[in-house]
Image 1 (tube, rainbow, N blue to C red):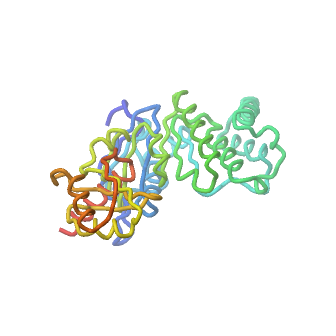
Image 2: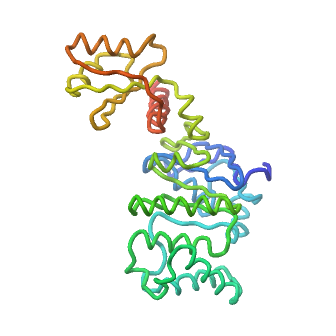
Length: 314
């Protein structure tokens, strides 16, 4: 495996009895990028992260993280990485400052440098006026900033974030991502798991996981450009009737309602799909506007997971 990548994994697998939680995943993640794991709960995101951190032994496969063989050299890796879990894991009965000071001691940061870092992070993450506040009394967004400060206190080369924005408001999520880009600009590699499509679009590159398997990988714009289906949007006064009519077209692989529109994935082999849909709706007595639109990451996710489901059934 090469030092050109912050993380490399070959055939990474984890089984729990008869359940295969992670199924022969290959990864090559460059330095100083934000790499995303996109997928629903239970798809293997957290299990993969825990193996890459050295917290969980793989059932099969191998990984190299920052040049260290995992899990064999996991102890050496700990000082080089930061890990922020979905659930707030700091001490609620300690103040903001006490939590950061304690984390600094855990990482054996010299006292003078520890105090300097605490002050830097209190300023950076807008926590200076909260320094004497108990962590248990903070809002979700404030806790999130404190957790990120704690995870980066020792200036790690690599930051693992396991669904870090699941319990915060949209503005806090936006601010959080700005902080991640700043870390990335300074040379930190960030691996973040999420089930939010808008967050996945912010990543430099991402992997889509489904039932433990990696089913698609690449920059978001590349994944949407290479989707296997045609994407159509249908606007109609009677969406229920429109959807019923579209259900009769075998080439329609997925239909979702987005407000006052229907969003449909159509088999790319169907010639002139927009005209076919228009004709079908007209024959059903449904007045509608049909247009081809660009795919989004949700379309990609539906496409690749549907394909894998068909392959599994066959």
